[in-house]
Length: 92
Figure 1 (cartoon, rainbow, N blue to C red):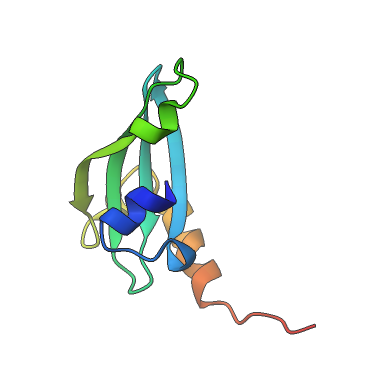
Figure 2: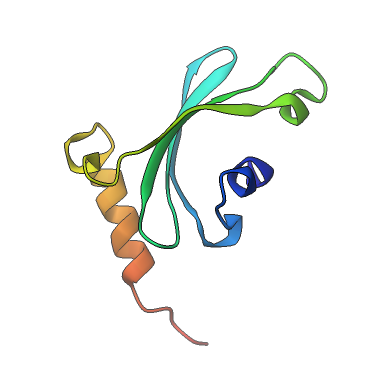
């Protein structure tokens, strides 16, 4: 997943995965928030049965939904992820 995010121009260390939902035997629907606050949805395809199926994984339907995520099925989780991103980190 990290390599796939890099392929979309995102820094995996600064990208929040809102959710990955199993939608079939070979794919999951997902949503992420980039470090600049853009929200993207996508479908992650992979071969679960193959020993190294993750190596052939790919993203399909990569779509910027920044202007419409509030009306989507993951609106609450996305809002929670934004709140988590903006909360100050505690120092030990």
